[in-house]
View 1 (cartoon, one colour):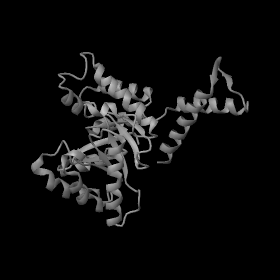
View 2 (cartoon, helix red, strand yellow):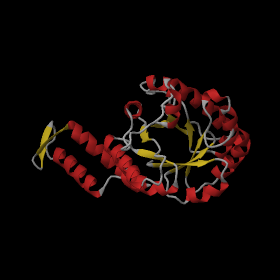
View 3 (cartoon, rainbow, N blue to C red):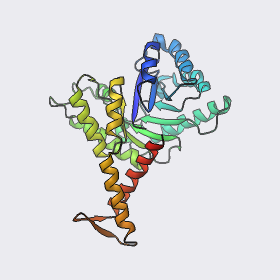
View 4 (cartoon, rainbow, N blue to C red):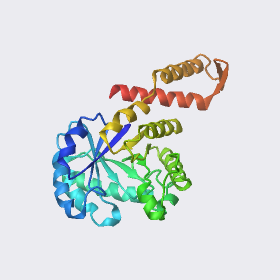
Length: 288
C-alpha cells in the first residue's frame, strides 16, 4: 500500500475518478470533509460505493470522542470495507477499543473475524504526541499509521506548518518522526501525511522523495493527480532492487559472515536486513 486517496463521502461525482486513479487504497471520508448536516446522507453513499468497489476501499469514520463512530460503523460495515481509518487516536488503547467494535460488527454482518484492517491517524491532538510508543500489540488489525499536520496545527494554535521554503516547522517535523518510529515499533506501515497544495508539483515531489528516503512506505493524497507520483516514489527502483539483490548474494556467498565487502564498501547485518525488506516489498508490489 503506497497511495491512499481521500474522497469526500458525500461526493458521488468524485468517486469514478478516484477508482480510476490507480490509488492502492481509496479512502471514503465521513469525517472532516463532510459537514454535520450531511453525515447521514454520506453514510448511505459510502456504504453503496464500498460494495463491489473495483479497488481496495477504506472508510474514515468520525473520531472516538465525536459520539458518531458507532453510527458510522453500523451504517458501513455491512459493505465489508477492507480498512477503517481511525482519526485522532491518542494511544494504542484507542486502536484496541476500535478493534473490539469491529469484531462485533463483523460478527453481526457475517464477515470473517479480523478481516477489517485499521489505519490510525495518530498525531492529530497534542496528547497524541505522547502516546506514539504505545501502539505495539494494540491489535493485529493495525496495519498502518499515518500522521497529520492540519488538525495538530489547530490543536496547538499554530499559524503555520511549513517554512517559506516548504520545510516543516519543528513541531510537525517532530510529529512526523515520532509517527515513523511508532509505526515501525508497532510493525505497522508508516504513511506520510497529505501535501495540501496539489498545484505545487515540485514541493509535492520533494516531500514524496524525502518520505521514501526516511522509511515511510506510502503517502496520503487529496487529489487523483498525486497518486501516480506517490506510487512511483514508494516503489523500489530497478537500481535499488538490483543493489539489494547483490547485497543478499554477497552475504549468501559468505555464510556466517558478519561483514562482507561489496563495491569497495563494508556491509554488515543492518545492510542485509534493509536489502531483504526492500526485496520483500518489491515482490509484494509486483504480485499486486
